[in-house]
Length: 373
Image (cartoon, rainbow, N blue to C red; front, top):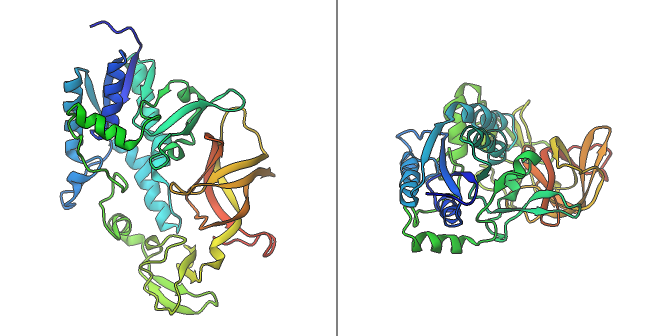
């Protein structure tokens, strides 16, 4: 069979999105090679593993879709890499009282990097994924990762650190589509897994309340220590079994009796103290970033940028500046729950122009350098 268009490696997870991405590329005449990265094994004790991304049968579903599309399919074992770059740092972050962004870390250090290595080995010119994102030129004419048209499914946030040499070779077949359109297309073509439930949790952790804390507890129990829960006046109002059970902004499951709602406002991993309060101190005017990535041609300061401080955050207008090598995001209006460890992603219009990990938040008007988290 001759192919008028280039050879493309498509990441296939066995789910609806990647399967339709592969289908569309085949129909467009590309020479498509399906690749599945084996990243994680679920313990047998997790009862809902069959409904999870990275469950054992996902590789088989991906193979069945590839067979139906008459394309080759390969599985590559990258479990050790995933453990080193994603799972290990995830555990360390929670033990350190911060809230990580493992999907950002995975795309940056494992998935895309490995897919491009594999593409080079197989002689493929491009890599395609099922992300709901697009590639668009910005106001300078430079190609950037951009928001997908389906605002509810947009995954550009997770791709903020994608370098230019990868952007030039990336394809997002679903970027112009809605999830409902993709689901209908999968059902219409009778693709394996077309009716598969969509996972809302991390791919390597089971579902349910307390799953994250249990995951960390199982793997680092000897490093977990109890500590006090302190109110705004510094009074002990409760005790906890480890800072890994909390995140800034959390309201439920605090184990604190109060006539008014209280929220986690700060976590001190050195003392083991979790600070709670009315939530007023969750609002900050500024975030200090670390591990910052800026796109080609992007220089600071940036005026009127839109900054998202977590995946479901719609974004807020901010000025992004660099003072003495320190990158600060100065919000036009106070932002809520700027959580250390989470990723702040910077947009100009629909285009991603950079991002970094939130080190801490502060309100300069309270007192210069007043750290809130």
